[in-house]
Image 1 (cartoon, rainbow, N blue to C red):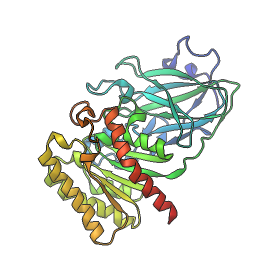
Image 2 (image 1 turned 180 degrees about the horizontal axis):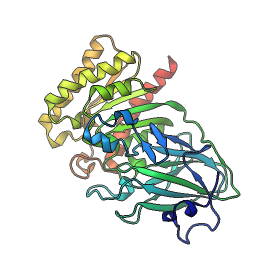
Image 3 (image 1 turned 135 degrees about the vertical axis):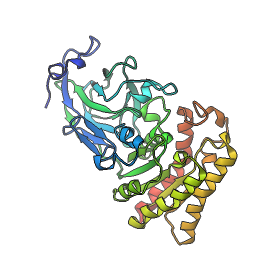
Image 4 (image 1 turned 30 degrees about the vertical axis):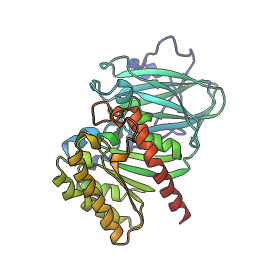
Length: 357
């Protein structure tokens, strides 16, 4: 149902660069669909159900960040307008607002979607913002990637009053890939949401996904394993070793976490990654890598044929890997692309193998 947006919330007053006539739709209403969020009701756009927000103090906040959340639909409108109300304001010194609080828009589907623009607040104190993306007046899929390090309270989609809006083209892989990991998994510090490595892989493989990266707060707790174990998923990517304060802490949780997932999902493909900034502390990185490799090798020794290991030292590639981060740890866009390029062949093989079974 369309309506006049500013009658609901005057904070969404838009400037003269927008078309004069716009039909607005709440993103929570059909035929618009939302992916990558466990809760999407009223002003709540959450990655975890409320029962799991108390796993640790960090997750209380980060579960409300919309990393991996996507709004999808099809329209023949010559433009798509976007009006966003953020959960928080603020600035991160090593991550631009385009990634922290912005939304980027892609057109197309079937693994061939193309980036068109990024909507973002004018400064770090602005809580509501809008943008318009012009397109051809033909029926086309639209994907809006939601902020990586902020939450949202509302998103409205605007199209021409004369245009049609319909459900999006389904993903080729409808059962999501689930990523569990650190700030890197969450998307720190991509310049925009679509450049986090799970988002890149989703476009390449035309796959739905769920981003359960929690900055500094994914610690392999049994409660989180319990939640993940009951999800419907095509592949599980386990990538949290950054968040263990020490290698001893990682050793105490890693195998236990995997085994809890495996017990509930005997044939689920599981990919384990070690951290990519190997050169920052080679001795510690190598020790952590061996802990993860040991979980993998023990599973293989027990006859598990649905587990794979990716050496984090290889994720940034061999050509100037020191250019792949913003601070020696968190990937920039180059780093995320290198990670996606390294993981893609294995992930594609794993998905194809699962489809053939």
